[in-house]
View (tube, rainbow, N blue to C red):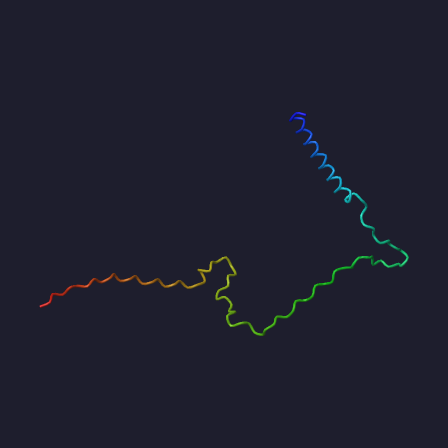
Length: 110
């Protein structure tokens, strides 16, 4: 066999192997579903065989610990409109300008 025929045979073999794997994986998916319990209309109940509806969630537990901590202080300004925070706060004072450095002046000694 020449190289081209061997390559073609290997590619065909890989494809046949892949189709076999797909078939093995599809067989359980195509089989009938698990047997469900028989539904009997003899009992006359309409409740079904499931777990039923979910229970309502429990109410949250009350907070523990008493009064709030001392560092839990509300904000000084509340923004309830379109204005900016800077419009509600007083302007900071500007730092004073620094005086120029003084250079020592020599005084003549007598």
